[in-house]
Amino acid sequence: MQVDYIIVGIGLAGISFCEQLKAHNKTFVVFDNASQQSSTVAGGLYNPVVLKRFTPVWKCKEQLDLALPMYANLEVELGVKLDYKIPVYRKFASLEEQNDWFSASDKPTLSEYLLPKIIKNDNKSIDAPYGYGEVLETGRIDVKTLIEAYKSYLLSHDLFVESVFEYDDLKIEADTIQYKNTIAKHVVFAEGFGVKQNPFFKDLPLVPAKGELLTIHAPNLKIDYVLKASVFLIPLGDDLYIVGATYEWKDLSSKVTDLAKEELLTKLEKLINCEFEVVNQVAGIRPTVKDRRPLVGQHGKYKNMFVLNGLGTRGVMIGPYVAEQLYNFIEKGMTLEKEIDIRRFAF
Ligand SMILES: Cc1cc2nc3c(=O)[nH]c(=O)nc-3n(C[C@H](O)[C@H](O)[C@H](O)COP(=O)(O)OP(=O)(O)OC[C@H]3O[C@@H](n4cnc5c(N)ncnc54)[C@H](O)[C@@H]3O)c2cc1C
Image 1 (cartoon, rainbow, N blue to C red):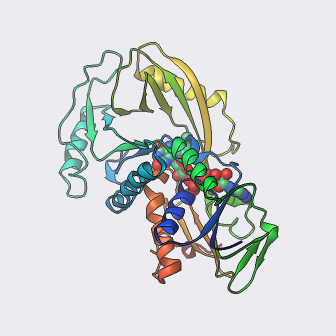
Image 2 (image 1 turned 45 degrees about the vertical axis):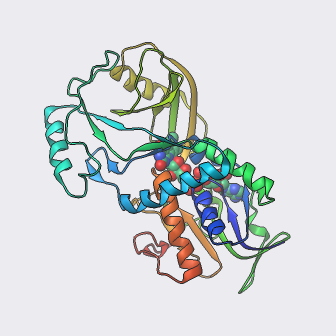
């Protein structure tokens, strides 16, 4: 088989890059063995504001302008609902935080995203005496549904091989790259934390950050917004809510732990006072980077080999943006932004 691209990994990075290839009529085949779960378990939130500090997310406007149309197209193409528009309410812990909110909402970079008023809490199940601030242009992508539907789409078009990618089987020539019986012009590695097994890019300074989430059933909670306090509460419908997330840098297995469950429950019990039952727990490894910028670029020696990684805690928004950057770099000879180019690191 001859294709323009081999893609390794079908998380948010891989899907975003495949969408670029489809849009430009490039041929490709994807390999994935479901060894990483970061995208599958993600809460799926998109939100243009850093809610800890009330600052804009890096390139938030550019990211949203690319990401939202991509998910809207995929909804049509795959025939599934993906984008749930839902406001995010940031709980205030003090009067000082309320004041900080008003100052932030006055700034030109934030005024379109922060509603300049305090929303009173009238829900007896939630402890929020200082009320909330509402973030605009937010929502949730159902990433699990996206990945399942995307894999089915690829399978039905013979574009997907469900198997581990064995790096030793690559034969690299100047103009082509061969993997088993597939000959391609380029290979793009989008393996998330799996990149640590990749001999060509394993030394990139990726910092894996394990995250766990609970799903609870809470019939009396009755909130129809995402609540951001010491934890996130994300309504899924049918009285189900995602509660998350934890951050852990030592345990790098994708297994769920009692420790994370306890941490989330302790925080949750301080936030809500209605009855609930835990119905699910999931874990994944976020591919984060120390300087909080993605890892995008070309291998130093093999010019037909590329990496798309480091999507960190915000893969939903940043994936489509960096995929376009990489595509334009490879196919149109455009320069990669310095901030995302892997050449900013000596590795
Ligand atoms: C608990 C948690 C909550 C999160 N919540 C959010 C959120 O609300 N909003 C948000 O924007 N982001 C969120 N994130 C972050 C987001 O999930 C990541 O940014 C994103 O998933 C990274 O996508 P990726 O495609 O780079 O990596 P991954 O999703 O890890 O995908 C990599 C793929 O490569 C495959 N792979 C790896 N190695 C090989 C190999 N050798 N052979 C074959 N296949 C291979 C893996 O199986 C996997 O499918 C969350 C993450 C976690 C863990």
